[in-house]
Length: 301
Image: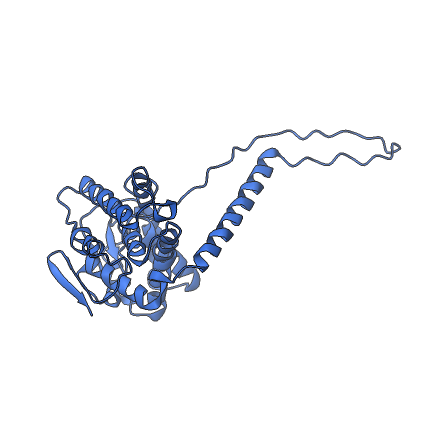
């Protein structure tokens, strides 16, 4: 999938201060002055405490909400709908070993959510997997993966990397690693934010699909940048807006971003899938479902 960017907290400027030390006579009976904690350090500690407090408050809100897309049956449904858009199949478990260059500038696209050699998330997956399983069949490609990160290059990967990926994907440990990375980078953050925005199950899937496709970046074409554009014109349900109106605006902006970046791009994952569910008022993704992607019709009873 797309760029696995990193959200940076606003950095607190570090102020270089010279500690003042005073020589005190041993006979004075006074203790030496203790170095003062810098104002920058205090600000960092305050920011950390505030972030932890806010996260705890958010956790409490989420704990009181329905499971939504995190319900095991709905999560399974989400992977099937996503796979229909990613690889025109409902059998998402058949994608562990998939790997090909789609010619989209992202290098090799592989695995259950389309991790890409050019967008950091495939590299992150292999690095984390290698920490737990040193000497695995992909570990020897780590230097090349680091070198091509951010490009569409295959340098150092061909001709053996695709075969190594497919072989490793036969192992339960690597399959589990793919799912864990999918959840850590895409599924869990999408569902969490959607719930905080007051969105139901469909809205949580809309966020998930967008995060997978656009990547967790703050630039205008990344998921978080896209969401910021939507918030300029529409209120989330948590802010008092209409859920249907907000999701319609989100899909409008997302479609525009897709066609802006890739003129002529197939947008059926929005037009005849997510938009269809929204127009039907199916905000909880109730089954049965029928939708189309790339001209193919999919059904879940």
